[in-house]
Image (tube, rainbow, N blue to C red; front, side, top):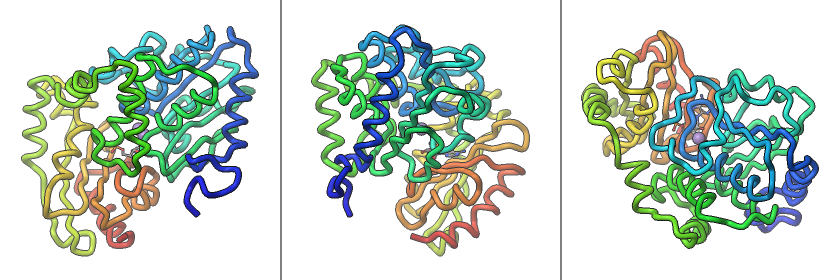
Length: 344
Ligand code: AMP
Ligand code: MN
Ligand code: MN
């Protein structure tokens, strides 16, 4: 049954009683209560944009005790530092110890909350907003729509249900989130995405300026680093049942040589993904010695979410990731048989 055709479900595929429970959880806390918003480790544009856009909506409603955070090093990627609402961001250690309410954005499983996962065991209700098919429903209220292209789609609908009026600051955050997770609207699956984009743009935000800042601006060193990392890519035409795999890796030594922060590696999956001879693209990025963050992409020949889940990670059918151990060659050796086992 298609989302929206089932009784009790809105067009989002999320049940009305879950929307109602989320609205009730938010309305039940006093406006001066401590409200903690959290997004995933190594936050991307959807994680930060949906979290900060939602926080600004709560601020509009009169909430005064808002803090937003993410686990790990407090390294906000440069393109997102000027997002509206960034003043609400605090380091992990400044997160409320016992908030009255916890709101979680773009997090498929508790492992993506790393050191903050323990906060979920307190008395506060936990409301999860997400769009990963692999979401483990770890919240008290789970607003998870695998058909949504970004968590910001879910955040927008909850803001509407709370009576928040869209303004240019909220819209900029939600637009950044939407543009990031749709690859600048290349992975759109429904006209409703552009309907939402139109509503956001109608507030007066500047999509061209936002796109230049988020996608088309990088330090010289990041460009040189990309040249090296892409230059060492390997093509394996026989992999993934003959659909082909292309892969490369980047180390902390690469980052240091070019004086770059780890997040600059996150966009490298895009040129790798464009290789015509391979269905599957993989970038293996060093976190600490022997530990790697792996990005997987498919053009449709393989369900890379299943591959990632089998290796302890998660994601979507065509874009997924996991944490891996060993050398880059050993990581790829773990992936190869799982590609063959998960042909679409
Ligand atoms: P990335 O390659 O980092 O852009 O991530 C692609 C997709 O996979 C996103 O939807 C992520 O949320 C998800 N993902 C990446 N790494 C992990 C992980 N370690 N565990 C669970 N999901 C992940
Ligand atoms: Mn994300
Ligand atoms: Mn997302």
